Image (cartoon, rainbow, N blue to C red; front, top):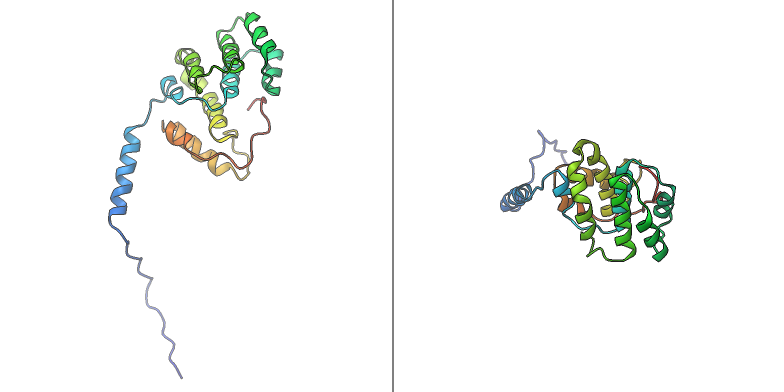
Length: 194
């Protein structure tokens, strides 16, 4: 008969294959932290927008105003020359609503400069706003722009991605947030309030 050996004590941890792996990760983390951007409008509006509709809706929601025509245009993503001229003729009282209409004109005219023009339009107005009030809105619409879904936890397969985006964005790691992959299921409530 063969004897059965019993183990004594816990297993030893595996030896690291390369000691330089830790150094490389520490160096990478240090460089990422060094390139953290300001958590204000200057940082929020540094990266170009991928989808101008998100910039339009951000300005519209930040205005706090009600405009049924613009709500309908955003919800149905209507972009034609008639929309351009109507948005130019409108004279809203709210400065932020005027910016939403200007972003809409840029979108319709397809003159966003690769998404950079929206930033030039929005940055000044958002610099003047209280960061505590607009930061959640910016996070929401930048999340939609980057990964394609709302930042709100929904109990679906994209929650891990949402948390990663929010963590990176709130820490000023905007480039890292925009480097995340697109969500598996897309946002289906475009134009709805978050």
